[in-house]
Image (spheres, rainbow, N blue to C red):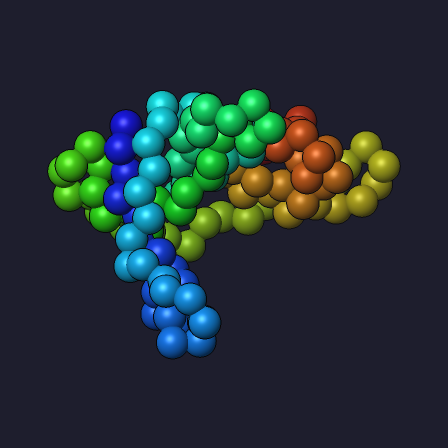
Length: 114
């Protein structure tokens, strides 16, 4: 896949001593990364030390030469409070948790609890 991505530094281009282009171009295959959020996409880089790049979908302007747009819904997400095995209380949404396990692994047992 080929991506044309808006360069978020472009709005402040006069603050730099070097030229800032309006768009960056990336090419690679989409890869699944467990800590990648729904508003992000991960693509391969071909570099062993830096195997993928995570890009905010809101900055993508073209995908494979076709216009691309992504809207962030302003839907208020339900937050539940769940007591952990150690007695601490964590905030859980449909895709995240404030517990140390989720922070470290990107998943935890609280996400499935009701």
